[in-house]
Figure 1: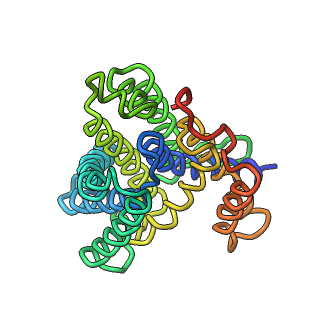
Figure 2 (figure 1 turned 90 degrees about the horizontal axis):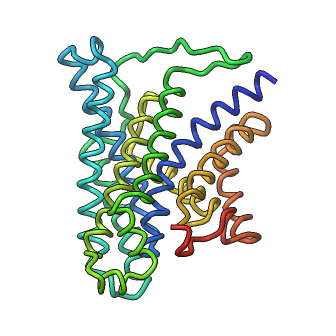
Length: 302
């Protein structure tokens, strides 16, 4: 029972990260019906920015003395940098192809993914980047299981961001404009909504969420490399499809479920096949329920 509870906690932690990344996929698909395959690389860049900032703060002696503030600064820097990357990505790779055949932006997305991956490899090196400081490891005992400080931080931060995104989409004027654009882009433009700006904002918001996920993963595992965006991006895409692509609550549910299934599968079957569980779920889902658990995006669900 203790092992089961520990794996559930581990799975929730992993699923919360997948959910944050999956939200970027599902938001972009919901508004322009395009899978942004470069989104995983934005997440990877966020992880690199976080470690670089923490390394600089450690060198000057700030991070060890003010750990919480240093992590906050790393998160803030990653969010700003990834927001800029997300905006640039939309302007360079997607906006010029807005009226092109659907295959053209898809190829552009794959090309940007490969470009960003190799760009980071060339500028930061192919070796793993290691977290430069030690984090607290003493956790909280919960019915025989342990919740580490980083697991608690990831879960609380992820839930807060998901709640904030839901309120933003449903209650703010910009969120309503995003929903209107997702429902009917032409009509939204006719009533005065700046469609191009709204689409760019969607990319920026998704990139910010991915940046937070990247920094949290860097803190959790202690090391990263230029390839983490590829695998995490595919799993987050699986989570988005699992919940219903284009469906924001579905992305959250899909991410959590995928994390739980992967963690339990690795514990009770084999850790060597944990990636196979995610992609096996994707194959089965596409065969038996391609609309996802909560249904593919329709106007009322965006």
